[in-house]
Length: 319
Image 1 (spheres, rainbow, N blue to C red):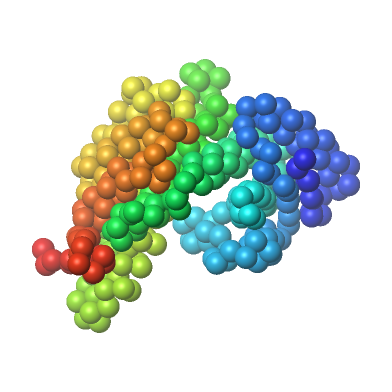
Image 2: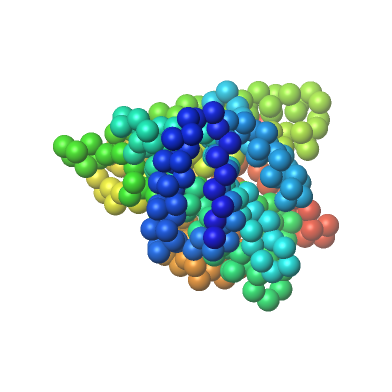
């Protein structure tokens, strides 16, 4: 049974109302999603502190959450495996859950909660898929390993968005979402990535530090690829891939360097979803990883595999 902990300055009657609401929703969602491994939900005024506390409790290697000027997390699913058992905790900013008491924001607040539940469901199935037989990805080479490590977070976002799309607020007149499906944000990220990676390449010409450049490339493109997956997840989850809205989105991305990777990523995500949860271990993520490699190439950084050393070499040619 999931324990709900509310660490908030909300009035006591609202805390009880929130507890009752979430208990009812969990019982309902549990009929559709695998939630047996969800141990706790922590709703807190001190979101960052509680995320780090649970990360330390779970002995995770990375602490914190997304916190940049153009993106900050408001909820996070944390998981650990003890023996063969998966344990999961959702930490949610109490400001988000307070939106449930405001008619204007209630549906959006529930949608974000639903999104996190979908992450829990995905973690459950990935734990089962990646625990079969030998260690997941034991035969991947170094380049494939790098690409799969970046592909899985992109998949996770797409999956959670596509499943939770049914609860996104929509316009009653046309049935379309009341928000722009993160398209404006995505286009800004596409432009900023090009500029920032270009500056990083210029710096590399001076300091000759490939490791520094590669780390920056991964960090800078990670959020862009996940936001692209978010947009694609909404298009597919709302079944509007052939709607004029989707055509308008494609028309805006087509003139950019990101166009090929966008199309490859979307095709790979749809294929993964159609096969889910019967993947061939992490190897099923390789097509998505190839889309990420193409994205990096379009930014002027080419990954080459060196089989003799089982190593990855970054080629950064001059224009």
